[in-house]
Length: 277
Ligand SMILES: NC(=O)c1ccc[n+]([C@@H]2O[C@H](COP(=O)([O-])OP(=O)(O)OC[C@H]3O[C@@H](n4cnc5c(N)ncnc54)[C@H](OP(=O)(O)O)[C@@H]3O)[C@@H](O)[C@H]2O)c1
Picture 1 (cartoon, rainbow, N blue to C red):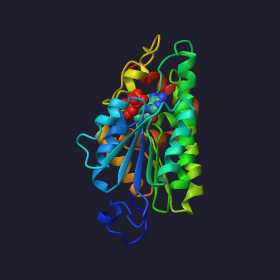
Picture 2 (picture 1 turned 90 degrees about the horizontal axis):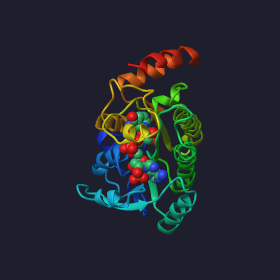
Picture 3 (picture 1 turned 60 degrees about the horizontal axis):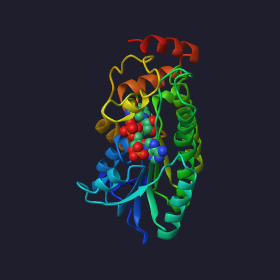
Picture 4 (picture 1 turned 30 degrees about the vertical axis):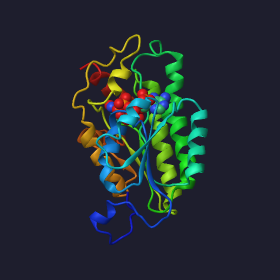
């Protein structure tokens, strides 16, 4: 991924900055499926020396190499386990790469009332969507240079409280706030942080995982769900443009706009109608 120096052509902006002896790597969590895997595909032509692909399913991570020109290093880790961050930190220390791109896409949600979601799922949502994303970012920053990019995959769920998605939405609000403040701290170091806030994406494993609770019927449908190919393409474009927040569809852009106009109780009343459609 590019730096944002003025006067660079689009072709130059799309290529990795090679002025370093260290390997230029892209680290992508959640790379075994959905958006994370699609990010791996879409950055394949950008000239990274390696993609470090992080998730739990080792076989999926190893299979990623098929079809990609860039060398893929499978880094199988359960990021809800705090010790996993130590393993990742040790790998960075041993290899001393230049982390030119970090994408935190690992995450999950659960649909249901407070009664329908297990304590373990509640805790793991917070661990993965908040603590692990922060730890991966904190540990990676010392290995980043000017021109580096960080992409935190948040959600439109960050824009308001959502009954029956309450913990998930709260974790994404946390990640959005964290990303925006970190961005300001890192601007002077030339590292760009972009919070990506997609609306429902229908062709990943997310919705299937979210529905595995004792009662997920609180949300009836997923109208206007997007496709991961478009979401990832727009997210990468917005990161290249140096944007603070990426809303990679018309629905997510509209949601962001209205969330700045209406108070939370109005937005939650509108959601109460939408979730029954
Ligand atoms: N799809 C949507 O509607 C939507 C909308 C807005 C935002 N998002 C966000 O987009 C991100 C990607 O989701 P997706 O739609 O691509 O869903 P997905 O297909 O279910 O992908 C989730 C990824 O997270 C990884 N993961 C889950 N638990 C993990 C753990 N404990 N340790 C390490 N990795 C773990 C999974 O890999 P393993 O199972 O192999 O570990 C998988 O690669 C998430 O942060 C999600 O909140 C999704």
